[in-house]
Image (cartoon, rainbow, N blue to C red; front, side, top):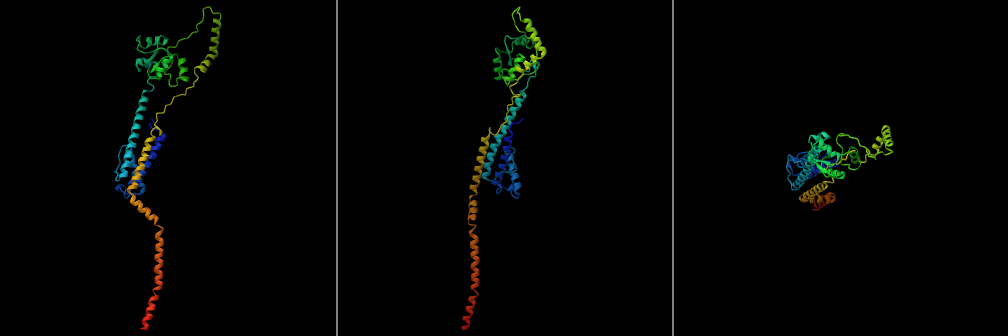
Length: 319
């Protein structure tokens, strides 16, 4: 059973890691659970938190910031729809698996594994005589059909579950025309078909001899294999019920938009810190120049100051 396609599983795994990194950015400085931990441990805890919210299990800590709560709400929505889709598709596949192959042959029909009103029988044919004689004991409790085309359409439309027809014709139509139909069980009620000709037809004996020689030489089997056993339909009509990325790509798009909004809210709440950081970054080149200037000026003063006391001492000598 594969409710999700492989590409969807990979997308879900990538989304989980992405969500963990976003949650780490939003909560690492404001959540006490993430404090005093290494960066790797913080990211792992954030991924675990996102996983718990997606599967509906919960996590070991709660968000402390508005961006984190907004992002958690988007995780709830993502997890709710993913889990509901997985459960619904798995239940559908299990139901189909139980209803597939409900009969294996004529004995199951005789034992009533299919409701008799779901068995199609073409009226006024040898098949109807066989059904009344061998299955229903004369009770016309079947679904009445009138043509072969009606039988095929009724089966395709789900009006009946099974029907009877000649094996040669059934083998041809299921192999070449109605690829969604299949044959079940072995042949039963085998009989001999004859060719109707006029009485005292002058070529009757020649026809008998020719047909006998064709049978003995294997030509009839070759013709049967060529025209009745050739197969245009694939061996099995595989209908994948897996949910792919295309089916719920809009859900991941909404989640991506919600994560961007959470990041914008985070930047807005931290705008003062961001302004301070950029202010320091812009004036980073000015501080070394001022420092060098400050270092040069005291050195000049120190060079001139020793001369001042010398002049002062000379003046004092004249006094």
